[in-house]
Image (cartoon, rainbow, N blue to C red; front, side, top):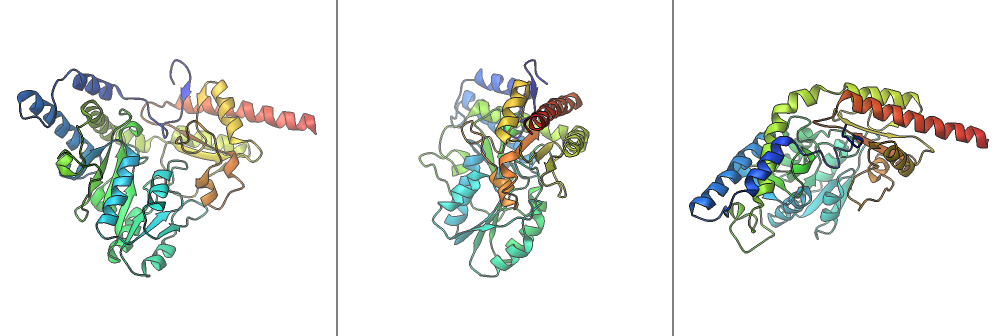
Amino acid sequence: MTAAGTYLDYNATAPVRPEATAAVLKALAMTGNASSAHAAGRAARALVEAARANVAALAAASPASVTFVSGGAEANALAIHSALAAGCDRVIVGATEHDTVLETARVAGAPFSVWPASDQGLADLDWLEAALARGGRPLVCLMLANNETGVIQPVAEAARRVRAAGGWLHVDAVQAAGKIAIDLEALGADSLSLSAHKIGGPQGVGALVAGPRAVIHRRQHGGGQEHGRRAGTENLPGIAGFGAAARAALADLPRLAADRAGRDALEALVAAAGAQVLGQGAPRLPQTLCFATPGFAAELQVISLDLAGVWVSAGAACSSGKVKASPVVAAMGRPDLAPFSIRVSGGWATTPRDWARCGEAWLKLNERRLSRRLEVA
């Protein structure tokens, strides 16, 4: 809870951790380009490489595998571009993927197909098996955890099938990082995207982590930064903050992974009041709850909770502040629930009181809505 209200929109962006703020301020006070050979440049380079090691540790990967970029969207685009440049001839994308994957893949110029999900939001592995049997070298995109429902996908199982078919598996791990353990090798991912602001780092910086089979083909030219994989002077303050947030998130992971009591209590409360929980039967992130209340418009819920001092979202926060029906819920076979679904998401600074306050506020709004319906009737 902040001084102004109860913030439960971590999946949109998390509050900046104090460790990240300190690291950003330290970097801002430095003078030097990380590509310069003099002492100031070497100090900046040391800061970048320390951050690279911390970000790599968050994915149990080697520092050399990390390429710093501007955020999750660029990381996803760089992975898709690299896979196609490396010889992938078609793209298979999970139906519940983030728009930065879906839309980039759709316009990439290769044959494109959408991989359906179950009513719980889980990718259909039998469908994938049949699709892979058609031959070619596919790029397959499957997120680790969904940004709206929190559903955790069977990435390792999918990876075994993709590798057997000679394909490339890209994993958007932006929402999973800092909430569940990530191991690049165990997942079997060829590339994996991360974003600083989802784990308590600054906005505007992310990373693409490449597995041993992946070759990253740069999209920005004109310099040898990031081991030749992305031209442009490094965002030193952003990278430093990302590294500090990654280190703090990794240390905090056991607590966050086990702390689901507040979410579960809110889930039970809204379900008892008639809401339908999306992805309830699937493995989910411990601090994400997506639910739909038929007849209670998502926009009205978000605005009413905002007026009550509780901040949540309807769907992904990537539409310039617009509230729209969730395409993820529709992809789960429930377009009837899509206009009524909202997402409540906590994280590193969320307290049990935050979840309880959200429940109290929502329950009052829902009771008021129902009483008005009775008055009209």
